[in-house]
Image 1 (cartoon, helix red, strand yellow):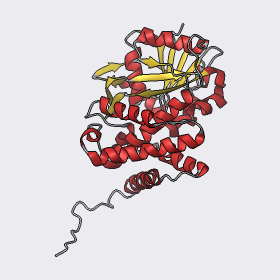
Image 2 (spheres, rainbow, N blue to C red):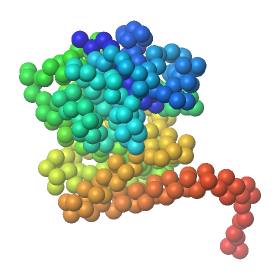
Image 3 (cartoon, helix red, strand yellow):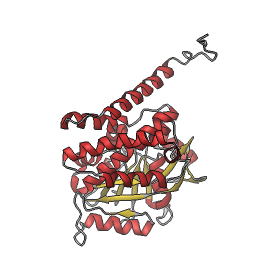
Image 4 (cartoon, one colour):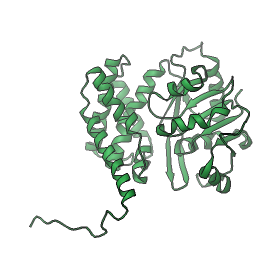
Length: 326
């Protein structure tokens, strides 16, 4: 039975999961792994989710502690190595690890550190969570797809059965797919389309239901993932793409993707594990990826601008010159 929960990373996604878990799990059984300024802020001000302040147990990464039954990673991909270092004391012989990260490689990276026998593959689709200042606002947790690489009904592993019981206890919606690798690629397809195009267009979800040009660009980016997957033996198809569009149309129209939130906040994005991965896989399998190539260049340019503006705060004139065509 899973009763002791630890999490590394309380951004929008991690907070959305904890907000659901704390409804049925005593707050004393939930530990947040953090140090430095983040730990000080959590200790002094708590964690704000949907207008409520939670004061979780804050555990310093260096402190010896009893291992967790379930360890969640809720950080951005570029923070994963640091998170692995922080989580070492949380992992024991019976700990189950779930990655809430985007991309198709985090489980293997975690498994190399702690052992794949402790890791289950997982992705979330349909989550609605937005970070506003220091508070997360979340209305819908979506569906968690999880399991071993291959899952046969009636013959699930002990880890899968334990997590299924926990999700049912906490009310977390879930699906256990037969083929988790295809599911990981399916989520990659969603992110490649929705995350990246929303970030470039500064578009909330509703734009994709009402602006045909935006929806067409999203579909073209996702179609490149389908084509690459077929060369890679994963074999996504039109039905999978249509299911992605169903997810796009199901979320709150005012909601924002995590990458759009990153761009609006001037933060580094996860474009390397989205368009960057698709472009590299395209080269590997000789598949043209022109849409993802240009999305990669635009988003990298935005990240460069963030860094430039941060180091040159007076570089943008409040009253720029206007060039007339008269």
